[in-house]
Image 1 (cartoon, rainbow, N blue to C red):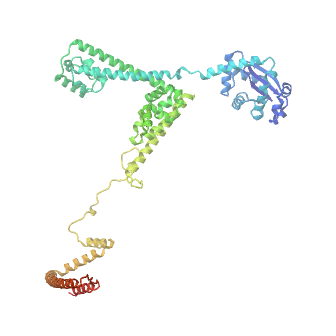
Image 2 (image 1 turned 135 degrees about the vertical axis):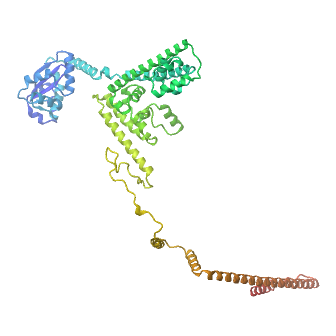
Length: 564
């Protein structure tokens, strides 16, 4: 069995002298404790030296990917015929087996053997000193690091940061210049500002027209629609604006040229930014768009710095001022920052913008990391995540619809709009309902079914209170009595009046008798009081009347009143 060992100087091929020792993996390290014992286990068979640093770098980069270089393939064909090769990387072993048809072995025993070879490498390979091996390994590691960390010109995100900053500045300048053109030319033709709303079309029309008197003879079909052109020509004839000299019109036209030039340059800059974003961050662009993605990168400083941020930070990036104000005043924190301008959040309802922004920020954080640290240049991940977010948005909108249209238990009361429709067509599957004339009610029909239904309704009604039943019974008897009941009512009323009059007379007699008795009692009390007073004066002392004598008189009075 042979062992392939990679060194900074080249490839070494060792012959295993005693394969039985590989079975005892735990004691294998003892065989490499000294150089003499190591020579009893393995022996150097061949060595392939690197010619220069570039060859070493290219070979090592291929080994990292699990691919054998051209020089390694030649070296193995020359020395590994009919032998089993032990390798440190299983991926490299599979590639060698496929291309060179050499059996390769990778196990824990092989890894322990590699560790022993590394410890006694300078002793097993003659001519390779420690002082030479250390600088070679250091130089190769530095070259490999520079190669791996070197950014390609296509991956420089500084251009995106500068482009989005310039694009924002151009928007501000364009708005300022366009407003200045409107205000300046408005003194001469004020009606034109209401007719043409677009700033670029306004500047083109002013540059072509000049003085408003020329509008009737000019053709604006390349700039404006027919209706707008007709309205412009009518307004130019009856305009209330002041007259303007030719020098002023020349300066206004120069300003219009500046507006048009800036708009053309802005369109070119937007195309450049879109191409750079699709190259550097294709997945982020697929999720949030070119402008929002570029603003996120510019706000984060770089794509790599943005990749280090979690999804919660990406969600509120750009709203730091509102966030810290909310934390200071203990109010609700903002739900979105720069990501608010993404098309997915714009499609969502106001109640769902917070949920969609959180989901979009989480997916955007994954897309940013994939773009910054991944090797592929496609946008499949971004498109898949966007499709998932759109599906989630539809699900959330369906829930809100069912809640608003449903009952208290959450069950919807409405049917889906496409229930009776064909897929891809507007026709109904079920035929339209026809008019049913048998359901109409004719006035000449008999009332028997109506009476039956009324009887059924009476049976189905719940029980009522007793007094309602009594009233219903009285009404029924009154209806049956007819005219005789009216006479009976009159007689009853007369009897009631006579009874009331007699009771009132009895009450009057009783009250008069009671008043007379009270007057007599008062007189008797006065006489008794006078008699007691004379008795007290004669005896020269006070006499106390017992209360027991007054009580029987009170009881007797009460009995008399009750009897009356």
